[in-house]
Image (cartoon, rainbow, N blue to C red; front, side):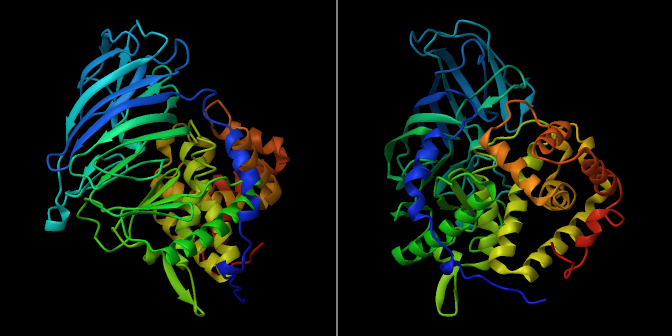
Length: 483
C-alpha cells in the first residue's frame, strides 16, 4: 500500500484564526465557576534542597474547601486566616492517608471569607547528576533537585491545593500571584507565565493554571510568542517549531470542533533517575501549557531536515501531538472517576494516531497500531474489560497508552466515526461535573447517536474476548485493512 506523507510546511497555519481563538480561550469552560486564587511567596535553596513557602488560597467555594493537599515532604509551620492572620486549627500529617504524592490536611472551622494561608518548610535530596550522582527514580510527582535546578510539577503539590470534602474534587487549577526567591537561580519559570531572570521574580496569571515551578541555572528564550525554557533555542529553529505546532493544533481542532486557543511552552530538563540519560529524550509530561521533556537537549533536537527543509522530527510529531491533545483532555476537560486515565491518556494517544495517519501516512499509522497491539498482548492478563473498571487505578500505564487507544479506534467501527468524534467533542465543550464510569460514557455515546445494539455488539466482541480472539485482533500486524 502506498504511504502518503504530508510535509508539515504545506499544511495551513493558525494565524488567521487567532482573533476568535483568543475569544474562545476567554470563554473556555473551567473546572470550577470561580477558580481559587493562589498568592504568596516561595523560597528555594538549590544547594541544600530547602524549600520554604507561605501561600494563601482565596476565592474558595463557600463552606466547602476546608481540606487541602500538600506534598508529603513538606512540614507545616502554621495555618492561619488570610485576613486576620489568626491561627487555624488543622488535622493531618505523618499518620494521614496519602493522596498521590501529597498528604490531606483538614481545617475544622474558622476559615474567614478571605481564605487561609499555609506556611511550610521542607528539604529534599539534591542529586548532582552532572557529577554522576543519580537517584533511583524520577516521576512527575517528585520535587527534583538536579544540582542546577528545582523541578516541581503540579503533581508534586509543592503548592497547596484545596479539596472539596474528603476525596472530592481537587481545585488544582488556580489563578496565581506568586513571588519566587531563589538566590542561586539565573532564571525562573512558573507554568502559564513568561520566564523571568533570577534571583527573584513575581509571576501572575489570570488564566487558571495548575502551578508548576522550574528554577535554576539554565537558558530561556521567548521567541515569536513561544517560550523555550531550560536549553538553547535560536530564532530560526523557534519559528520552524512554532509552524509545526500550529499545524498539529489545527489538526486537533478540526477533529474536536473547538478552537485550539494556545501555543505550548517548551521545557527541557534533566531527570534525576539513573534510568535516564543526559542528551537522550526518554520521558515527557505536560502541565499545560508547558510540554516538558528530559535529556536537557537543545530545542534544535526537535527538528530534522527533509528534502532540504527543516521540520518537526517525525518521532516528535507523534509525541507532540499526544501531549498537545492534553489541551482538550486534561485541561479543558479534566476527567474524574473510574475512566479518568482512559479519558485523559487513551484519548490523547487516540488523537495522536489520527495525526500520525494524516501527516506520516498509512504505513506509519499501521505500524503504530501493530506495535500497540503487540505490547498490549503482553499485559492482557491484568486488563479489566472497560465496562468493569470500578476505580481509576484499574487502568494502569499499559492499559491507558496501549489498550485504550485501540478500544477507541474499535469503537469507531461499531458506533461510527462521527459518533465518537461528537462524543469526545461534547465532553470537552461541556465537561461533565460528575465522575465518569463506563455507564456515563455509554450514555454520552448514545446521546451522540450510537445505538444500543451497536454498543452491545462492541461490548460482546471487543471488551469480553481475549485480545487475540476479539475485535482488536485486526490490529495484530501492519498492513491491516484500514477504514
